[in-house]
Length: 364
Image 1 (cartoon, rainbow, N blue to C red):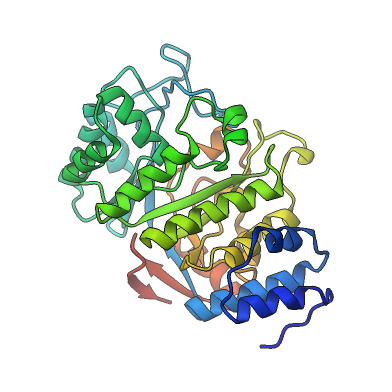
Image 2 (image 1 turned 120 degrees about the horizontal axis):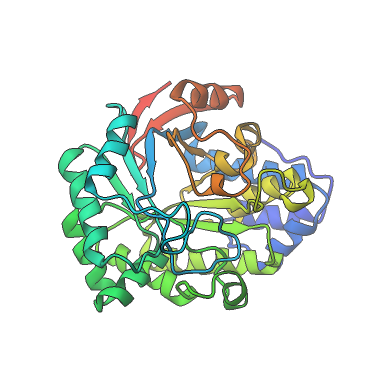
């Protein structure tokens, strides 16, 4: 398919993409600046079709947040509670299994587990959470604990991050989610997540996981104080690690949510920024197989649009998502398989139900 470019200066970038030449941060800045958003979209769509054909992936999954008690003070979080604060909770094994049993169906492929950095419990609590789920639901993959949580576990246990990950693997851990990355620059982290893993620590956690044989996920939380250049530095750091390990399966750009559902629209990312960021992610991350449009953050209809802007994955059914909904997410907390298939087909794409590792479960 030939490109129709209103901005002729995009042709030089398009030539680099078509020849397999890696885009620079300067190229990325131009992609953020050009008024020809549809030209950028066409280019990104060509890349994803070359990598994945007309396929768009989704998964039937369950989101679990075992505890919301957290030592960190992140500037974007409405989920955390301090010990003893109203609304604070920590599930014991009985509560965890009851939560899952009430939401379980036999089509669920994965548990997606993220929680607070809870100093009221030891590392064994986090190991036991995985052991219990793996014992009772051995058929489900366990995607648990962000790179930032891995660094936290290292601090509270006295183990190295490698030892932490080895213990988690023994307990049944299959993969790491991509959270905790936020923006991988220290200027951003000093202001927005000063109590969590540094850029290097987050990257190290995933590098070790890859060395131990795990495939993992990567995210970027955009739309607050970061510059476009910082977003691109973030992508560049991920692709450098991917060059080294080839351990990332997918990149997920996450739109920052405001602190309340009733927040002004001026506190939210624009549709243009969301679509442009998906497309630029596809173009910059040439060594990633998949780009995910996260419907929890940008809504199902923009997610559908993102399937022509370079995305080839729309995440999952989720059952019940809490973290984005503890702040200003306007979306529902879950979608059915039927709804996900409908959105994908509506974009003239082929729905592919997958497992955690992009193995095909069913084609629609």
